Length: 162
Image 1 (tube, rainbow, N blue to C red):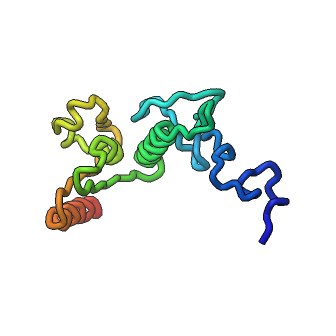
Image 2: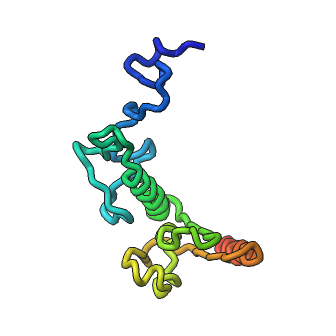
Image 3: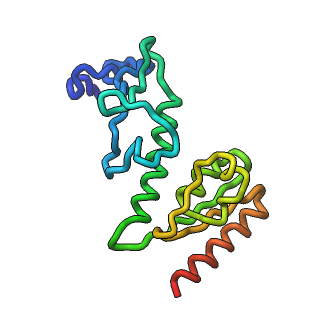
């Protein structure tokens, strides 16, 4: 199937899949209105003309900018869900192994119990807003702890449902 005529100027349509210039920037918000640079952003991002440039002067991808934007979108989506005036949303998160971002998962769940954890306390980036639903973040270092983590969250969900 030939699609070159459907995407004029698109390098991917011309078979140049290694060229990233088609993805030169990210918009300030996703299609749901979540922001890559909200007021209380988790990661700093630099906006240029209202968007995040992903391609530098040497046509190389700026993956750190894309990664920070993705983390901010995730964090902002959880924030916007918790602040929905029509439906209280509780966010429950599970971290598995040491490669997880504890701070992001704490922020998403709005879990006050993590504020004294060194990962949060040392970062200065953890948040807790008692006016929003407070969820739960549970960390599991191995598969046995993962079972317990899900049991803990199931207990929390059951408590909320009553």
